[in-house]
Length: 338
Image 1: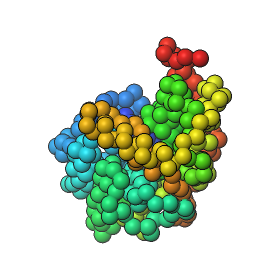
Image 2: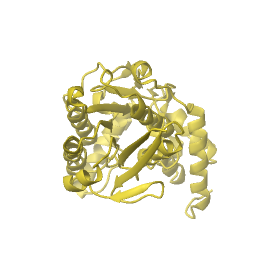
Image 3: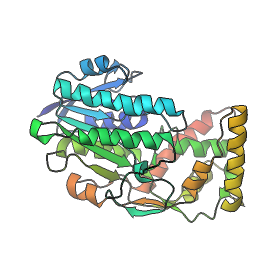
């Protein structure tokens, strides 16, 4: 059986852990996997290191064929941390890979690199990156993606690719999935912004990981140097997504109070003003209102054709497994009120 050495940068994060599990469970290739992250995990050999330290990266990538770079700070943080990790860190990854002769670099980008508040319906990869992004996370993901793809050099044997998942969710997800859990816990489950008429592509994390594993096998000179959308290919209305979890967690009377966008946007602007003035975190933001008011649906035909990608977990399977995890959280949460 063929043996391939792989380093997963960000291996202790949600996507990284799912990638490592799938690599280790693959029976067609003997993947020798190392996680490189700020913290260790129990799934594979771990190297504790910082993406902003190129010496640590270079040492970890010695004699490695494939590098998967899925490290990124969570959304909602300051601009400085995104530029430090997503831009400077990614530049370090590219430089380290080239210096030690890594053959394949697979980068986890974001479907939002082309989103600046416009409606996206069946958007494909021909859509240009935004000139002005709505937030620093998407701006730095865009810069990082360009760094990775521009480094593609089949002539020298260095192949790069970027995957753009949309709306990642699943067990262990501390962003989209957990935000619904928090709303259910804190009594915010009764509120719906808008009329629930905007469609979203939500992508189960197992499918995101599957796409990365496919790249380990199928990345070649012909399909390298490009970005590929990755979704479940089953668009859903956002509040249908949320209501599935609200109902499953026992909040049957959810979404009874509707807030029109004509009211929601001014409320968000006022919240941001006072948040900036008094230095507190604002959750009700104009960015989130923009997000909720626009369709975000992506075409994955390119990934199907050139990578052999298709979702291996249905949206229903992803929702059900995530609900099991959230239910376990609820049952252990002493602050949860019935």
